[in-house]
Image 1 (tube, rainbow, N blue to C red):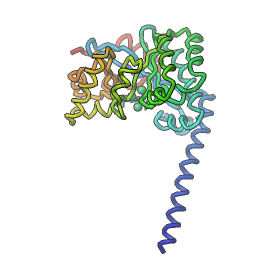
Image 2 (cartoon, rainbow, N blue to C red):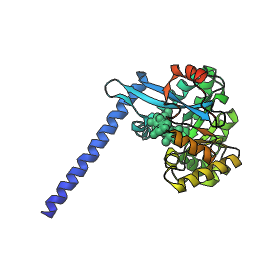
Image 3 (cartoon, rainbow, N blue to C red):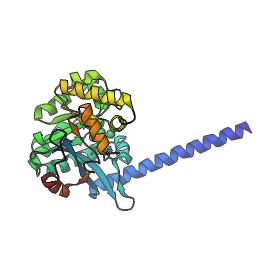
Image 4 (tube, helix red, strand yellow):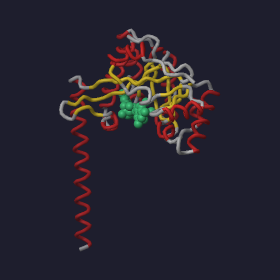
Length: 278
Ligand code: C2E
Ligand code: MG
Ligand code: MG
Ligand code: MG
């Protein structure tokens, strides 16, 4: 009986894994087509300064308008793309699209999430230069958002990549700080302009004293090093008040605006850009 149960479990485990693998391959195949069929789009979410309340930059966030499944979140396909070479194609498409859009918004910086795999790819720098040249977008209008994973890779021997991007005039932002190892030495040793504090840490501030202490300490550290500090995931007036009290210089979240289509940015940045400053 035990043996039978064991066999049953194994069989069940196998078919679960196979299903997952089949699903992954299916998405991967469809995503390959999606890039060719123009099913991807970029939405832009404003980031606001907390002293003047004005819009200061935008984060570019990719979406997949699937003909059958509807609008798919990047959380559901980026990890799949990252496990194959697809992430490079996808990332290149995102870069080209964003540079084309950003060329119409002088003075507004747009940050692009870049996967570690893409940043490591040999052709990355050339791709970036080509996009800037083709669209007339200034490198000053572009920043890349990287996570700690990238920094660890860089420490393993490719620290030059980030410096070369920096030399072009592209901003280097550290995303999701406070969600992983969050090594303090990264902040000292890498050319990082902006620290984005992970929404998990920010959103827990109201109920968690330790998180308030952490966010304040990160803000103080960042400003001491002359970095801007963005609080992510600001959903309510209360979140905003706490982020400001903690000393964050900028904030992003549904309280200000959800990510929106490129065509809506001009109106937002022109007319709805201010919130009440402190
Ligand atoms: P992220 O870079 O940390 O982006 C912030 C995420 O938080 C976005 O989710 C955004 O829509 C969401 N968000 C913004 N404000 C709020 C808020 O007030 N409350 C809550 N609960 N969420 C908020 P999204 O668009 O689903 O993206 C998820 C992740 O996918 C991103 O996290 C980023 O890691 C990745 N991603 C998105 N676009 C790209 C891309 O073009 N390339 C790569 N490699 N990754 C991307
Ligand atoms: Mg990001
Ligand atoms: Mg983030
Ligand atoms: Mg994230």
